Each structure stands twice: as structure tokens, then as C-alpha cells.
Image 1 (cartoon, rainbow, N blue to C red):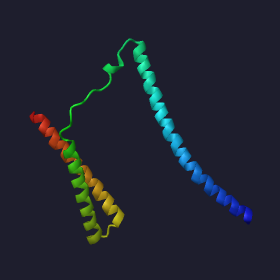
Image 2: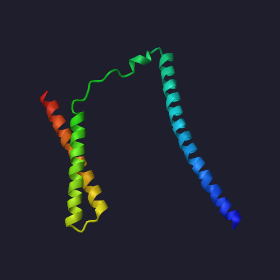
Image 3: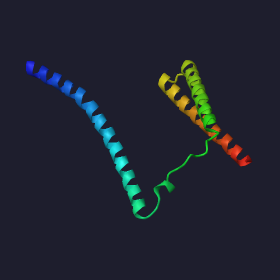
Image 4: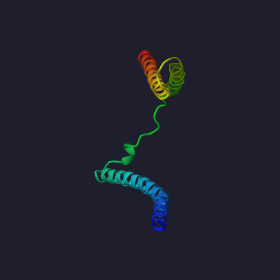
Length: 125
């Protein structure tokens, strides 16, 4: 009995130690792979005689509709949560599906409206 309890405590301690180490190792591995791939790509461009700075993106033009997109997304999510509350209160739909479905639906609807507004403004210019 004592040995089993010791093994359980040891397993818990090992889990508490190994999970953060594994997460750190995974993040480090991803960053390392990205950095080495980027370096290899630049070296290949240099070997071909191309300047790698030509392929680096400079300051891009700001998106004037970025704030509109976020605003309509958040308005849609707020409206979706409100409609989800109404659905949960006045219908037989359970709480979680009512909130999630309506929030996602109206959030997506807000993004569609933002896209249509930005498309219309770009067509006018």
C-alpha cells in the first residue's frame, strides 16, 4: 500500500516537472526550425546573386478598414450573446449551444458586413 502511494506521488511530481519542460522544448524547437529555414532561404538567395532585402516586405499601406472589421466583429459577438440569452430564456434551447451558436453566427455576420462595406468603398475609389 505504501509503495503504491509513493508511485502515485512520484507520477504526479514527474508530470508537474515534465509538462513545462515539454512545452518549453516544443516552443524552442519550433522557433529553431523557423530560424534555420529562414537562414537557409536567405543563403540560397545570396548564392544565386539576389539581394535578400528585395524580398523583405517594407512598410505596407495601413488598412483603413481594420478598425471597422474589429468593431463589427465585436458588435456581432455582443449581439450574439444577447440573442443567446434571449434564446436560453424564452426557448427550450440549452444555455451553451444558444450562446455559442448565436455568438459565432452574429460575429461571422459582422465580418461579412465589414467585408461588404470595405468592398463597396474600394469599388468607389
